[in-house]
Image (cartoon, rainbow, N blue to C red):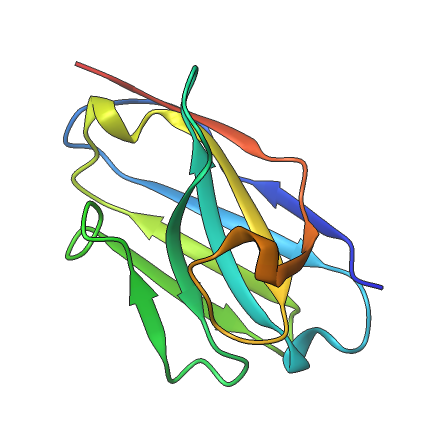
Length: 122
């Protein structure tokens, strides 16, 4: 069992930065791939980024590539999403998730956090 709690969301102007964190409970955190997804109002939840258990493989949605960076610290049971050059279209609730392997498909993640709101004003 893994419990996930996101933090770091907020309101930022376009072009600004935010750093999201996801704290995980459980001693098996390092065995899980971790992902970030987001859901904008009225839209379906979509893949943002994922990282494998050791942190040496990362993947990004095309819409955030070059602007967002995912990383993890297995000693601290945390995964972070550094978001730079934010755009109004990045506005969404951001969720972290844990799964058995890196994937862009939501159904392959077993555990989810409650989400944190990111709002980017123009």
